Every structure is written in structure tokens, then in C-alpha cells.
Image (cartoon, rainbow, N blue to C red; front, side):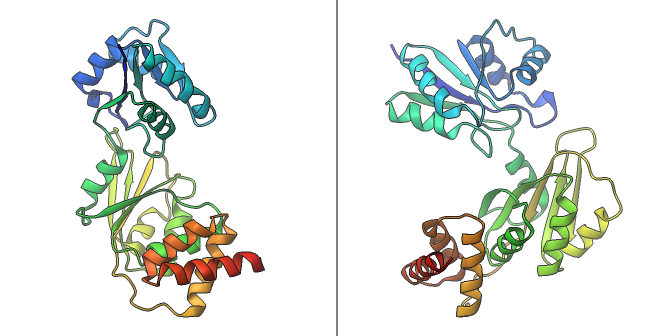
Length: 279
């Protein structure tokens, strides 16, 4: 009889947020796959759950290989729990490849839902929640960041993204340069002792952090804008070139720029092909 893969959400800060059913699953499962065995051992100890040699490292560097192993374990009838260092597996953390492999093998994948930094930040931001998009981490390189933010500025949905405390002020400055009135929220250390949420216009939020030593986990939430009805050919070329230079594929660039500008996908794809060949 086949086992199952269980995605278990873990606290993003406050250990009291570990759900009773999550405790039960982690206590009873046969294998616990985790990003950092030392970190997860501490979580289990805090919840008085014996590790018993069940912890197996599964991170971004070995996920492809471990996916094969997880499929074998589940096929052999084992209950395999998948956790990350914090939050819900697969959301900007390892997990997607494993889920896909187990599902493609026709085996059971289920979940113990719970903490998520994305949802936590969105719900406390005060910005519209009916439609939103998760964009992962903000680009590091200055040009790529400017291009990314320029595209986001025309996104009609609320945007949630991660940023490091060392780079957040630089990112806030880049946001101000595009639109100082852009409504945003910076959510810092959610559920932890020093939790802080700063809301308002981009310039107001920037100034609130300008003279501070910023520490802790950061989630940014940016308000959406109306889709631009017409984008000039010059701006279209500039945005496509910026994304191509940042290493994105022609297909991804065409889809992204078409969605955000309203220009026909075929037109954008053809232009992206030409620019890629020129570069």
C-alpha cells in the first residue's frame, strides 16, 4: 500500500504557531525532509517531538536527487513529511520539484496548511487582497531591479515579495524614484518579538527606515496599478532589452511584458526574438 507526501507548514517566527495537526504528523511520520537538519531538530525539540534519525536534508542544491528518493519512500508505503526552515514548503523554498515528482508518479500528496509569510504580510498590509501575485525576491542588480520595478508599477494586482534587510533601503529608494506616492507596506519580523509593519506612500516608508540599522526578515507589499493602455515602441524595446539582459528567456519576457502592457503576445515575442539576436 502506498504512503503519502505531506507538506507541513512551520512557524515563520513564533513557535506557538505550529498547528496541533502538524505536531501529530511530525511525530508519527516515517521520514521528515527539511532544509536544515539542525534548525529542524530545534523545532522538533521545542515541540517535544523525537527526531529519531528521521531528518533528511532536502534543499535547493539536492532537491532534484532527493525527489527520486522521496518517490521511492512514498511508493514503499512510507509517510514522508516535507518542511522548510519557516513557512509553507514550495513558496520561495524547496518543495515544488518533490511535489511534482510524487504527483507524476500517481502517489498521494497532501498538506497541513499553516503559516506563510506571504499571506501574513498581505493580510496586515492594508492593501487590496482580492487579487495578488507573489514575485519571490527583488532583483539584486541595479538595472535589473529598475526594470523589474518599472514592470511592477503597471501590475494591477497587489505584489508581495521578499527582500533582505541589507538591501531593503536601496530597494525603497528605487521605488521612490519610480513613484514616490506608490502605496506600500514593509513587514518586518512577522510574528516575532520585534514585529513591525510600516505602511504608507513609498517616500513615507523610505523615510521611516532611512536612518535605521534594519534587521530581520523583510516582506514587501506593493499596491497595484491600472494596466497602461498604450506603451510606446521605445519603452517596449527598453523593457524587453532589460529583461533579456537580466537573463530571462524570450518566452518568459514575451509573456511578462505582454501581460503587463496589453500588447499582443505574438508582437512582443517577435520583438523579443529580434532583440535577443541583436544582443
